Length: 129
Image 1 (cartoon, helix red, strand yellow):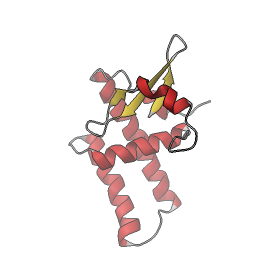
Image 2 (cartoon, helix red, strand yellow):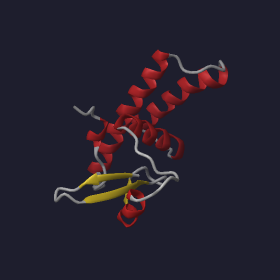
Image 3 (cartoon, rainbow, N blue to C red):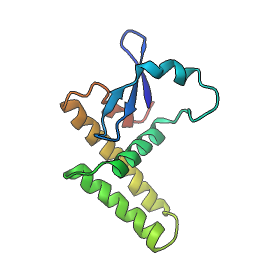
Image 4 (cartoon, rainbow, N blue to C red):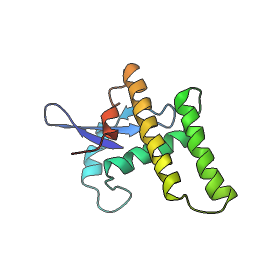
C-alpha cells in the first residue's frame, strides 16, 4: 500500500497487485489506514518500500524481459548465499541486491506509466533530499 498526496492537497491510496504488479486504487481504506491502532499498518522509509515492492513483485510475478532477468539474478545471489552456503548475504551482495531492486523498481514503474497506470511513480526510488 502507498498513500500519496494529490495535486490539490488530498490523498490517494494504492495497493500493489499480485496479479500484474501494478497499482490498484484503494481510496476506500484510507481512513482505516490513517486511524489504525496497532495491527499490521506501519510506515516504511522510501528505500525499504522500494525493496519490499520488488521482493513482492519478484515472488508473485513471472515473465520475460530485462526486469524478470534481473529478478532471477537477485534470486540467484540470495539462493547461493542462503540456501547453498547457509549464510547471510555479505555487504557487497546486499548492496548488489538492493541496487538491482532499485533499478527494477524504476524499470517496472516506467513500464506501468507507459501502460497508463495512474499509480505508477518511478521517482519513489529516488533518494529524498
